[in-house]
Image (cartoon, rainbow, N blue to C red; front, side, top):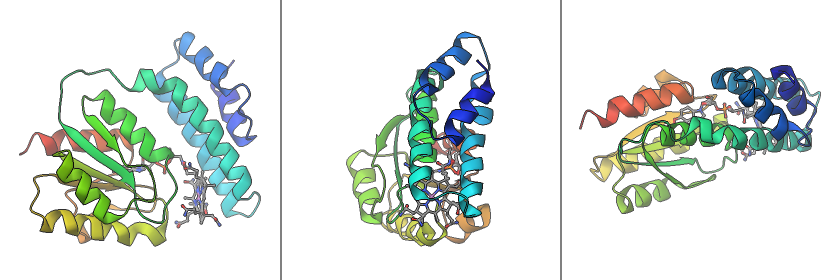
Length: 209
Ligand code: B1M
């Protein structure tokens, strides 16, 4: 077994062996970050590239995503639960119109591991729902993910609603098309380029009060 097998399962959209392949790498003592980055994430990037080039289509992309999810679930206990200090609640979701959830799930898992309580609103989340949940759970942080250029404006609405409501919750945005400049432009409190940096940011923002 090797990380390459995990990569291959995803690019071949084959979820039959991915759980045992990931488990075998964990058992062999392979660095968890390497399994995640070189096995799972790089494979999804390869799938996205082929989709962009018109070499594969949505059904294949969906099966690749399903395969990645199976692998990610095996990694979950090793990503989450490392720190037990309670850092407050994070409301997280993928914005309205957007169904991509793998990156959002990864961010949620790492935040959980860092000691945050996670309220996951899922995908296709209306800006108003972020606001409602932030109020209902007295959230320290509202984290919004977008993978489509066309759904990024939903973040602006979400951030604005939370600011206008005067909540103490900070807002963090991220996802492949999102940039630091965009986050500044929409007055979000922060931008996470990837899941680990979203966690670092969450730690910093919630220790600021
Ligand atoms: Co879609 N898709 N997709 N897709 N898809 C992309 C995003 C795309 C770049 C593919 C391409 O053209 N090369 C392209 C978007 C172009 C654009 O707008 N810029 C695209 C498109 C066009 C579409 C459809 C419109 C296709 C169609 O129907 N014609 C359609 C839209 C559906 C919708 O949402 N309304 C669509 C559908 C789908 C599937 C449903 C088939 C599937 C998603 C399944 C699922 O998520 N459950 C899918 C997939 C799998 C992808 C790619 C291949 C992979 C995304 C992924 O999961 N990556 C993607 C191409 C790519 O990204 N290379 C693509 C792995 C994941 C770990 O990375 O989510 O980027 P990512 O998360 C990263 C960072 O972005 C960051 O942390 C993670 C890493 O640590 N991050 C955050 C994410 N959220 C964060 C939040 C933060 C901080 C960091 O703070 C809150």
